[in-house]
Length: 207
Image 1 (cartoon, one colour):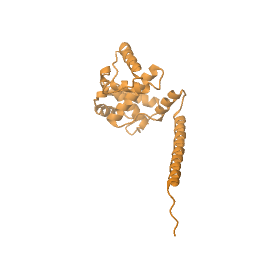
Image 2: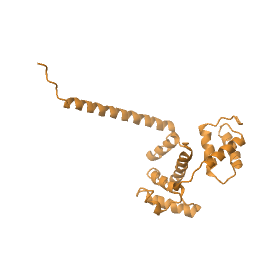
Image 3: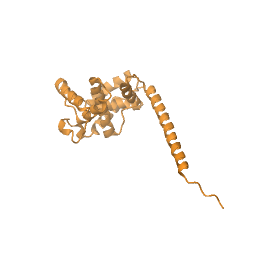
Image 4: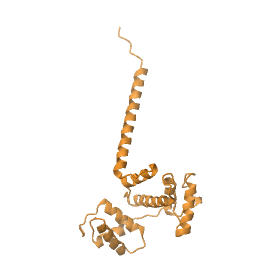
């Protein structure tokens, strides 16, 4: 369906927000045209051009400045700490981006590199994941809209354990882990109750 009444699902809204903010200097009409093509190609309903233009303007106008989006350097460490074990890879990617793309990584991106360095062994995958999580974090801060989903969690967990996991696989793992935690909790509770019973002095028999 195409037109003003086309339904904008959470999935298509994610695409609209991402495209609106990825290229902030690009004319909104160009971005809207590209969005229409992309949404149609991926099976989403397609809003009219003016609807998309209004949404692009709204999300761009509500983006806020943050210190986290300032350039990163060693001098930012006292305020924005990075685990010592992750610092070498942060520095390496910092230098590589400057050399290859003349891109100065932001504090937010450096923090995400530090967090994800324990999961990704491939540095290019680490960089791409850090970029995506930085972008999602900023959208959540500015607009209160969460771009991440179970698929992102499944990818990260799969990377950590060395397996290709689907969201369904990850959900099944989480359910099993939750069940195991519930059993442990019940056992601990039961143990505390038994301990309490044993430690309670018997009441004196009535004369």
